[in-house]
Amino acid sequence: MADETRHRIPRFHGRIPTGRLCAEPGCTEPGEFRAPVDGASSGFDGPGDWQFLCLGHVRAFNMRYNFFNGMSPDEISEAQRPYAGWQRETRAFSPTASADRPPRWADFADPLDAIGARFRGGRAAVAERKDGKPLSGEDRKALGVMALEIDADRKALRTRYAELLRRYHPDRNGGDRSHERQLQGVVEAYQLLRKSPAFV
Image (cartoon, rainbow, N blue to C red; front, side, top):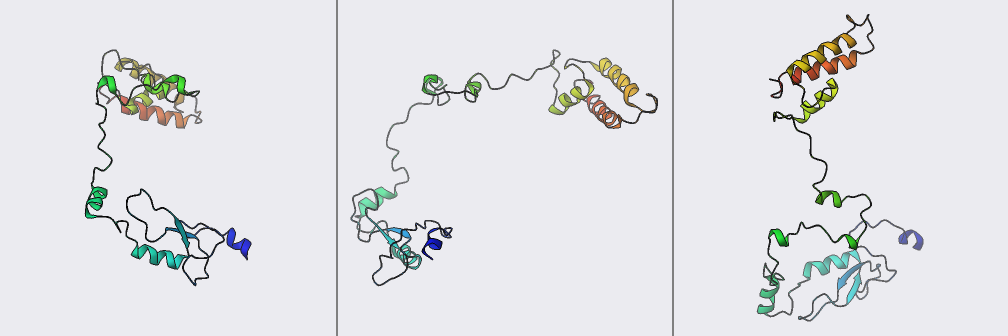
């Protein structure tokens, strides 16, 4: 039974199987929940000594526990200030004192270049068209389906479309229907690109 108790999954947050009895006088339940000892004096940072209580007694303890017990009104006010701990001056935010500066590389190893890449601008810049016309992500995928260069014009689009139709359409390739999926992708890509601002 003791072995079963030791390996049981904690059902309540904070359960610490200790093997000791509840600290409440006369209680024979296991003391598995940690609580500060009653009567902690003010002026120290933390609860001090701990006692271990059963579930029922730790619930009762939590109902009556008062963190501010024994503090003066000034001490309570100081503990409740919303900016407590923020009295220290913070460094200025400026290009020369930025939180986004590269780390000191001598302090650690970066074998996967996970951090170094960020400070080199991350991934390589996405290629743009020479004529400056915009391309969406879908446009770029469609260009890949059509096997066209990023700077292809409307004439190149029509020429490639006709070429791929001859290659994939059963009426034009001797009845071979094994390329129907590719044909559907080509038709969808062409319909998208012909309406794209880059090809208008």
